[in-house]
Length: 68
Image 1 (cartoon, rainbow, N blue to C red):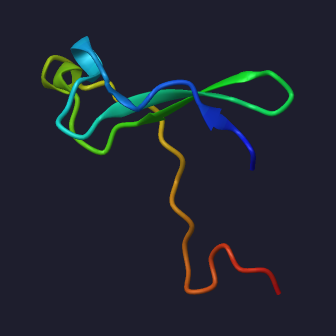
Image 2 (image 1 turned 180 degrees about the vertical axis):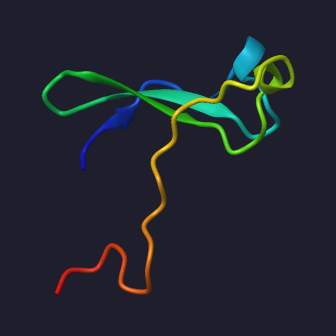
């Protein structure tokens, strides 16, 4: 909704790395900076611990995400 990228997406480094894992910074129309992160691929840290990052639960049911 009007934010502009400050640079193209970059690979996530170090323990967050993965073939498609990326981050990008954007500037909003009111001047705030946003960081977008996606990590669809497994992250190397997961091989060394049973702890996992929090992820929101996907919507459930056939009408999930639809109003009325």
